Image 1: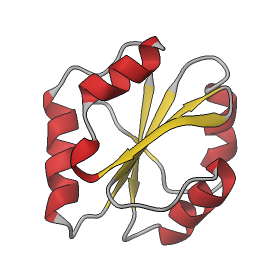
Image 2 (image 1 turned 30 degrees about the vertical axis):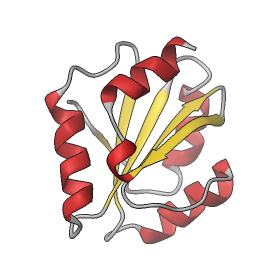
Image 3 (image 1 turned 135 degrees about the vertical axis):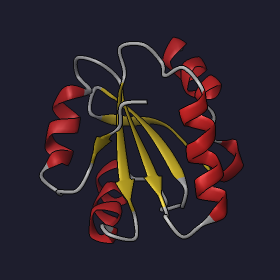
Length: 110
């Protein structure tokens, strides 16, 4: 898994633009949560969906960015949480044990 670190609020504008050309996944991770660690490990054990960018957000270090994500993409904050962004909009979000690469791939196929 080649994570792109999300550590600046200004990257959200870039993500919106990138999502107009290819899907973008944002994984919001709490470094102190065992469920979040399990979700991250599950994602990293699977083959990432092709032609998709994967961003990683450390919630503990960048809570303000997480809040901005919730506001911009009109989703309720969860941790861990994965969001699929296409054409500038969140088309899918999942949290906790529902996070899986297979589900992401299925959403990409729709």
